[in-house]
Length: 196
Image (cartoon, rainbow, N blue to C red; front, side):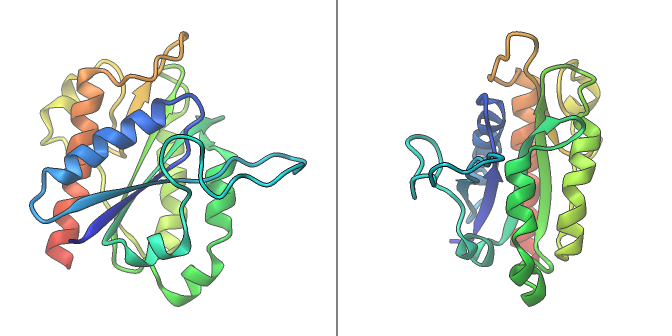
């Protein structure tokens, strides 16, 4: 069964919660399934290596996850209007996948979470698309034919799924955010099924 790779970094749980909603949406497309993966954290000074398997949550991504996937959804919290360092570090290490065309022609989308409504969601989503374009992915967002996109008062943009965690860092997506995340998962899975 073709799998869509839902690859994310999550520190407070918000991006992981969106990833699970996206995976639900992927599973709603007949013949498609989701493969949840994460990237390890990075630090300015490395004292010890990360265990080969995280203590909880999704396993760490491996190069074969990229070659085996039929599509890709990439998620990161926002850091000053850009993706978090662990995701950027991972993407910066994909030179050999870029050279071999591992992701060329695969549908891809992005998702994020911020603490505030104006915390840089759209700039983060747009900058996350840039490496995917260099890899030859076919980028898709959430079209305004999704009614929740015009109704949401929290997260959700045409550039990708998003979540506003608020001052209390609530990792749970609102109903609107969850619906839009599932819609994005369905969209990428449907595109992958058509392209495959």
